[in-house]
Image (cartoon, rainbow, N blue to C red; front, side, top):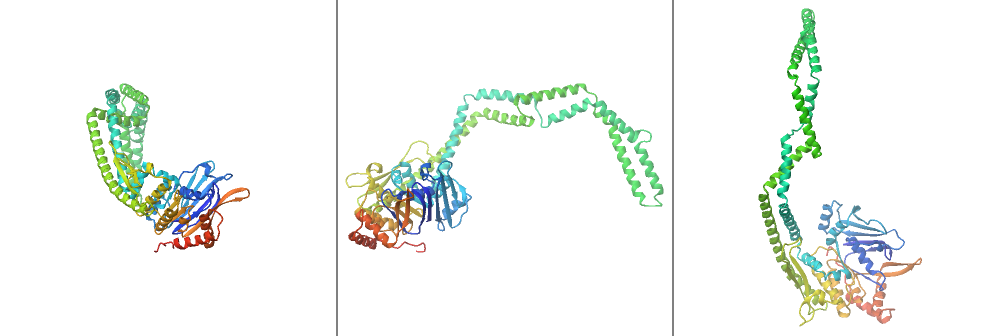
Length: 562
């Protein structure tokens, strides 16, 4: 439920702060006063697009902010949580429309997007404007309304998933079929490239290994000299480290009887001598592994050159080349198994298309059930809107071919307004007043199944009057027993039914025209209804009629507890 609406610098509205509650709210005022701006402001909160022309002349930006009570709207709170937004019993939406620049949207204080607003709109509020009346004639809108009535969102999500899967399978199949033309040429090229790599057969880390081996072969003499010199000093030469360590170990043992603690040091020197002897032996044999081998050095350099040429040709390093070999091998295998791959892709495509067609058929059956119910519900509503002979129905026709994300159905609303005149598409049969009542009847039918908390009706009374207007007012008041209703009207029969009455006025302030909205007191309301009845200045007769109309039509708003 919309609790508060704040509007700043939106077209003619300079600063508006409108408090709302449960029940039936009505906005009246002279033609051109800006009543529809209130409905447009609510629409902006629901994600409607706004042009820079929406900004009041001279202002930097327009701003619309709405506070919603969502304590009884679990679906809204769940959508907020799914979007990573704060979720409690209140929801604050703010739209900022700059005169030039990027528009911004905020949800509970967090920067958000129009897409998030649109996702919340279906559960928050519905704005039925003249634009919406004409949108009712569009097939896509009629399909959406039917699906909403039938609560078919889960089926639509599954339909969209299966249609996307079928489309992806078809793309894979067509890509394979298109590749058939150049498959042989591609296979030859890749096979040659693969053979070239496999002939050299690079190994991970091979370049570093070859570089180390080549460096060792080039410096063989220096390595051998250093190893031999170290072996002589450590073990083989006269007065070697090994001999000196052994002598000192024996000296310590000979005196250890005078101080046993030296026994441990003598043992350590013996261990050091063994380590020196082992190292000397390894150094003495070092030359066996570094033999002079000019041919091996040439072989290494040739191998390094071949690897470098291959890497340069492919424009990568050794790791990239090894990865490329795997990719080529996989593609060669795939191309070699082309027929198998093509048949597998065809089977997957046929299976996905069959599942999508089955789901579309199931969706069609669900829509037909919903269409029967919607036809009965709207027809029943039309009887109480001075269209007692009217009959409403929904025609569903299924297209041939592959189903799309919304299935295979085309939907058209039909109406028989007059006996003997036959049934006709809505776009051909309804006048402006009839279309307004049809929109109200559809909204009333949807109100019984949808979670929307607030309904805004802008000029729902277009083209009607008298008893019909009274019937429309009664329907709006009835809707307000379970939903918050805000109606913009110029008919006293509708205004008299409201629980709360606001007047929209256009005034001049500091040489500028501004629109303001006031909540009327009881006496002010009588005067406003009298003005609407008389079409101008109110006299005693019109005031008396206004009091009578208010006394007969007004009710008490239904609270949440009731």
